[in-house]
Figure 1 (cartoon, rainbow, N blue to C red):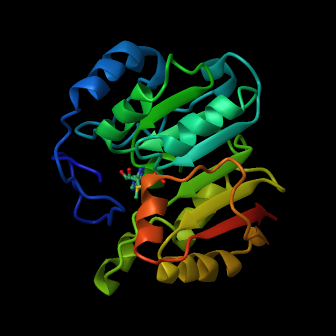
Figure 2: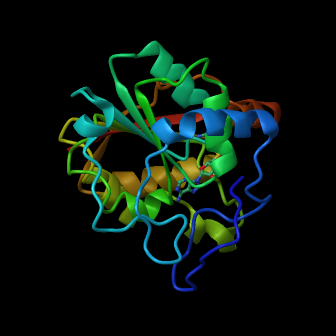
Figure 3: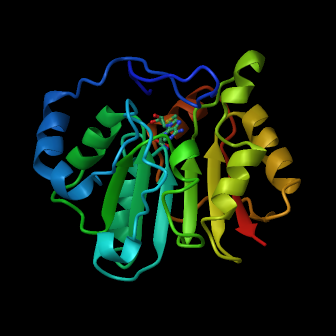
Length: 237
Ligand SMILES: C[S@@+](CC[C@H](N)C(=O)[O-])C[C@H]1O[C@@H](n2cnc3c(N)ncnc32)[C@H](O)[C@@H]1O
């Protein structure tokens, strides 16, 4: 899924690996060339970091989108199936997608007939960037659909949903705001429940399918392998 070749501080465990290079398929490169100037935020990087954002830098959503509207932050949008679908369905909402995998961003842009004015991308490691990137309580909802499952026990520490990340996300949404998650790995779903049920800032709101979540490749693969698809919505207390 993720690719890459650059900085890898040994002290930090990442939720992604750098497989498959950063080469974009031609049609995705064309979309990148057409839209990236507008849709991909040109964030400052610390020295040597292509997936980190300078911790002193803040995004001002009203300035970025040119209006004040409910903002969804999608973590790991992949090739943008949910993002493009939802942004098309809800032109009255804004969507900020964080993704480390540039080919995914190119692919997402290729799915847009024209640059969607309510979408922006940040090419960055969300676990780190979201600690500082956005003003507190600036997101209406946060979405994490089909995060990399890291099924082997020895890799569980790489899973994105952890107590620390739950605190980072809690700072992004106001009380009453939602964090929507979905996974096709039962063991990860149970781990998400353990983490979020024990976290003082989150309470389970619903296990219904997220209203704007379309079927993606990852859901289809899970169903084909007879895995149950679990949706969780946690409400900020
Ligand atoms: C299994 S894919 C799911 C993509 C999409 N949400 C979907 O449902 O089709 C997980 C995505 O999360 C991205 N990802 C993993 N860790 C990330 C991180 N720390 N920050 C941003 N993106 C991340 C990966 O690059 C990958 O594209």
